[in-house]
Amino acid sequence: MKIGKDPDGLAELLVKISAYSMILVVFFIFFFLFFEGIKIFNFESVQHFFLGQSWQPTSSNPRFEIASIIIGSLFVTAGALLLSVPVALGCAIYLSEVAPPSLSELLKPVIEILAGIPSVVIGFFGLTVVVPAVASIFGIPSGLTLLSGILVLAIMVLPTIETISEDALRSVPRSYREASAALGATDWETIHKVVLPAAMPGITVAILLGFGRAIGETMVVLMVTGNAAIIPTSVFDPIRTMTATIAAEMGEAPFGSPHYFALFMIAATLFVISFMVNSAANLLIKRGSRYA
Amino acid sequence: MKECEISARGINVWYGPKQALFDVSLDIYKNTVTSLIGPSGCGKTTFLRCINRMNDLIPFCRVEGKLMIKDTDVYGKEADVLSIRKKVGMVFQTPNPFPKSIYENVAYGPFIHGVRDKKKLDEIVRHSLQEAALWDEVKDELNKSALMLSGGQKQRLCIARALAVEPEIIVMDEPCASLDPIATAKIEDLITRLKEKYTVVIVTHNIQQAARVSDYTAYFYLGKMVEYGKTAEMFENPKEKSTELYLTGRFG
Image 1 (cartoon, rainbow over the protein chains, first blue to last red):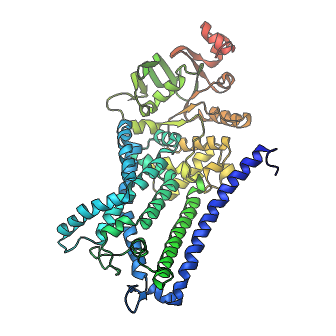
Image 2: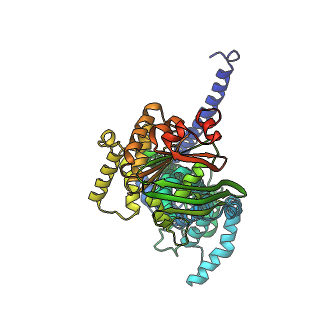
Image 3: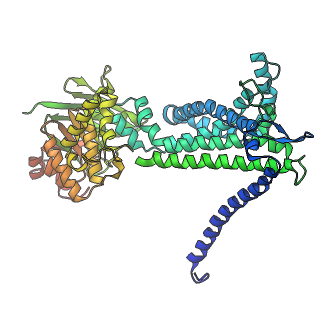
């Protein structure tokens, strides 16, 4: 490639560098996390680290076991998705298929504003409104619970899932709807049997992005879930997530200490979970688009 | 004189403030092919979409006048839009199969109208594909995506999909506009055979196509129906100057 004589060659080189540098960054982050994190296994066995439930990093006899923390993250994420996916999908279907265009125009910016609220603000709202409400409605001594985390996190991921699902629904060609209507289908039959299946790959992406946002969310869960590293037996128990653990403890963990390495291993684990979910998503999308 | 299947009287259509059709009255006969011809924007597609009330889907579209399909008053107060659309199968300008399998495309219509028995659905799918002259080409790959078919096959699949709900009338909006000559010939051949069972109304930009496939032709110009009659007679002896100019390719 002769740069200078061949302007296309230069452009190609530039986009190539951009692409490879992104991939490089991802690998670099992963290996950094992994090589720092793996040192914890000099202090704690692999089995104990992942399957044990006792997280006592600062005790005189420290224990680094993160099963309860992983479960805390997964529970609060799953709960938030369970709550927000139906609402977000309903909202997306309403705005793209049912509501008059003028109303959609009005509501779209409102949802986008919700997506743009900084998470610390939502966390503050959760702490001052949701947490006391949960405590008083269910008559429990503290509202800092899994339930509060689910509720507030659901609000946070709602706009992500809604906007991307709505875009997916809107991009279903008009010709499909017309074909269905011309066969004598009702609007609902058309939505249910033609539009939704056609938009499914996009909706899957929306849900997985919602998952990514929920499991990676730090501030909100740190503020409202109570941060007790136990495996919850009901939604009224407090939980502690992987993200909150890293955020709360990284500042205090001395550089090069077992605690420090353990936090890196938690980060690496979080990375792997996100990666697996993303891969599953890609697989699903490929299968979903068999006919697209 | 043949039995009248569709009878339009004084149809006026507006898109918002703009009037697209002016006082169109027209009788379409049973088991014939009627083509609607005329330059772009003359209202032929608008008229076609009046027959199965597809204009309802267009915001700000308003239809006035009386349109009867046999005894059904299409724009009457008691009209059941869904059953009218079931009775009038529609084929669109661009083939628009659903992103589903070939089988699911054809079975979709009967399924939403309540056919749940798998054997019966199988039978409908086979029969409809045979009627649309597609069965022999796809019978071994019914579970493949409809989007893998060629353009002409897709359009015949769309015809099969329309036939599957047992319509009485088939309306086609420039069904060959995006097809090559060979695929077009197949569709035209199919159209002439479909009239044995169905009443066919076709919008076309291709004057030769109208001559080849249709028994009756209606010529539209600027939202008005200028002339209507037997295709052979009109092509031989157009009564109106405008028809003659259009047919001889002087404008359009």
